[in-house]
Image (cartoon, rainbow, N blue to C red; front, side):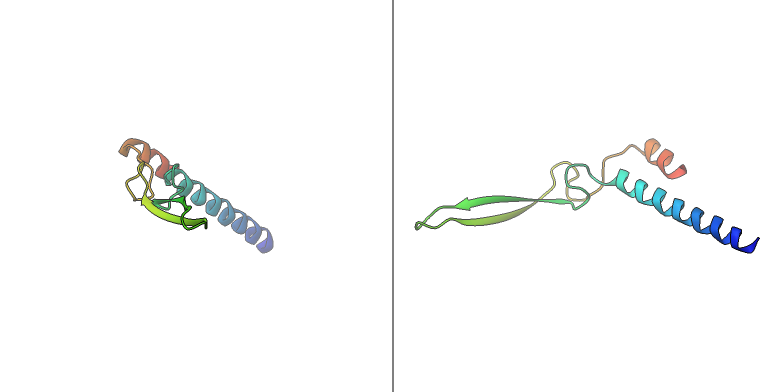
Length: 81
């Protein structure tokens, strides 16, 4: 009986962990994936050489927060689940 309870508890913890990961993914900005910034690559072709230049800019969708814009009502509904 004890081993069956341990199995049930571990299944519950695993399910809860996966639900929490799903909720965190729902709250991430879809444009930057929760990073809050985007990396753009440009190429400098001077002096006969090609050099790549990386530029990091704040995400235009979330404003650099990494969070999706969700209304308070929808956010409460997600947290209740």
